Image 1 (cartoon, one colour):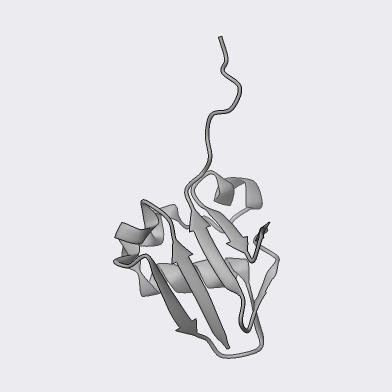
Image 2 (image 1 turned 60 degrees about the horizontal axis):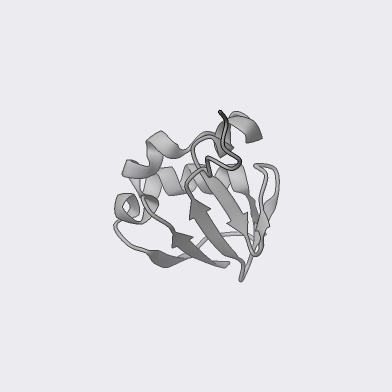
Length: 95
């Protein structure tokens, strides 16, 4: 299956490219398995890949599959576009 991947800063620098198309075997892959695959493909991403829980993962990297934020148990299918974003911090200011 073919998957499009878009890396947002700082992950684009760590992956060495802003985007890429990847070919994987099978018809679907869980997000957790895909993250482990990416960590093997781009070793500089390893410190940002956490697959022990959704909460732990989102502290390091937010994964979107299509327009939706994905959980580790969600599946990525042929033709999907995946976005890798840094955690979002901030919001209403605390005083």
